Length: 92
Image 1 (cartoon, rainbow, N blue to C red):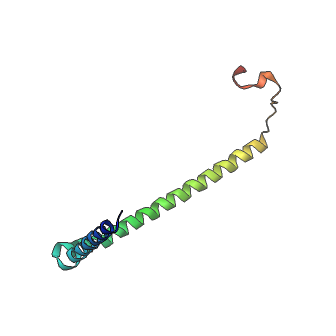
Image 2 (cartoon, one colour):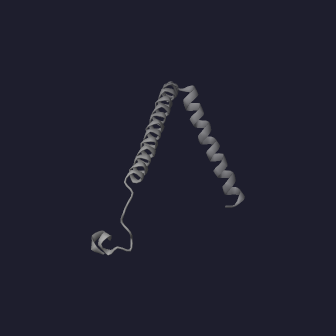
Image 3 (cartoon, rainbow, N blue to C red):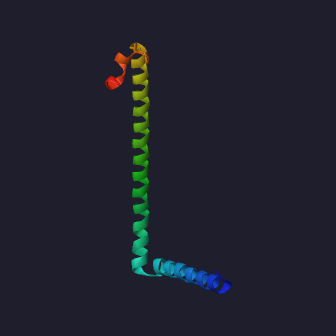
């Protein structure tokens, strides 16, 4: 990308950003949009918080399940030996 292309791209981006700010600050529709952005961001934040809480609950459930399986294995140790062909799964 040459120097002229970078200058034109930069100027275009600045003009678009300025247009957005002007729209949001100086028009009724823009101000209405800004009023709706705050509650919408609060909704997104609450949703993300809820998702995080669910993930933490699932992680706790996985840990409990792993502990239960470990306890079960300790209570009922396997008596099968890998050298015994009768105990091989599916008769292999």
